[in-house]
Amino acid sequence: MTWETVIGLETHVELATRTKIFCSCTTAFGGDPNTHCCPVCTGMPGALPVLNKAVLEYAVKAGLALNCQITRYSKFDRKNYFYPDLPKAYQISQLYLPLCRNGKVPIHTQTGNKTIRIHEIHMEEDAGKLVHDPWIDQTRADYNRCGVPLIEIVTEPDFRTADQVIAYLEKLKETLQYLGVSDCKMQEGSLRCDVNLSVRPMGSTEFGTRTEMKNLSSFKAIARAIHYEAKRQIELLEEGKRVVQETRRWDENKDATFAMRSKENAQDYRYFPEPDIPPIELSEEYLDSLRAAQPELAEEKRARYQTQYGLPAYDCRMITSDRVLAGFFEGLVELGTPAKQAANWIMGEVLGALSVKGMEPKDMRLTPGTLSRLIVLVAEGKLNRNTAVKVFEAVFNDDGDVDQYVKDHGLEQVSDAGLVEEAVARVLAANPQSAADFKGGKEKAFGFLVGQTMRELKGKADPKLVNALLRKALSQEG
Image 1 (cartoon, rainbow, N blue to C red):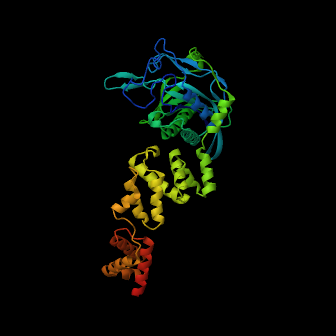
Image 2: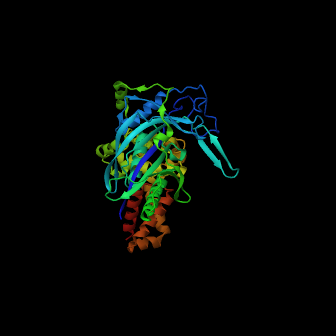
Image 3: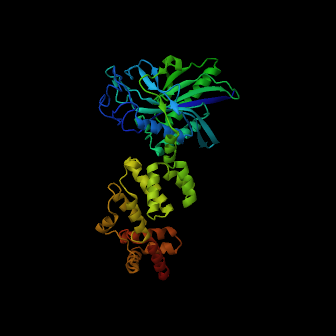
């Protein structure tokens, strides 16, 4: 029998507001345990929540970008459960009137295009974090994360493969980062995904029994978990056993899922309207203002760069992979740098330096003005490309002065033909065998002689001039 995998996602996204959803505590990542909390976010008796306006704005922006219908009249609800990570024993969320509904996200995979439907997006508060220490056999609660604002993006069960899931999550992450509503750092829990998965005979319209997988901390883990869980369920069914509806934990080290608890339904949480927060009413003027302020997203930039600058699709994908990188590229072009040169430096030297230093583009101190000046010096023949790369590496960390560095280190390119001819003569005199080998048809010997000439001139010569004068000298030796 051929089986089909059916997948739906629940993605929790921490919003990039400075303060929490219902109080003024900081949302900064880290900090000593239980130092970023107050009576409101820990649910002390008599403490009243007040909705953070920026949370609402960010949530609406996300809904608009994901092609959702925005609910003009929405409410908060209490989701009741008793667990140590939420000291007040309920979570403020939205069940009955979520903020956004009926969205859609187009994705592309190697198997073709597909549109993923979004069932809803709702606002809610995050819970705390439990730290399990097996050495002392204790579990400790850190409530710093309590009340950090979340949006939960719930899809319809439209995915059939892990590739489709990853394509959607990459598109979602890219969109939210371009909007500036979240940094989406999975390593810090800013983007967390729960995977609901079932299998059914190919061609069937009935859904199978689903499981929910949690503790997925990377796209790679999500793909592996999907493959494992689908295989596990198929094996159960082919053995005549049944799949149990439950929540399962992904174990990265064992490359497997394990049962955590039976899967709850909405009625298990005894939802009821949150009495302490008034309903949210949005005017059309408010929505229009947010629509007008929506930035150009990555996909739109890619299309524009190809049309406006004639860049290859690969270059466009690379330089729009991060909003800061795209802004850096546009800064270079505005300063007069040819688009292809700007793209090449970003894809080569900039991304290379960021990778080596373990930095993100937003943490880079280098400015477009500095790199633009360096590119101009190459174009003017004052630096060769290899020397320019060394200058780049020297000024990258602190956005140093390119001209001053070149002057201080005597790096300006040697373009004096007389000096180059003298160096060529010295190299040929010192390497007669290599000269003979070249004349005998060994092209590699010419490369050696070029290298020796560049070395003689301390790497500061114009490579094109060296090539031309070296060939001229070799031909004259006859």
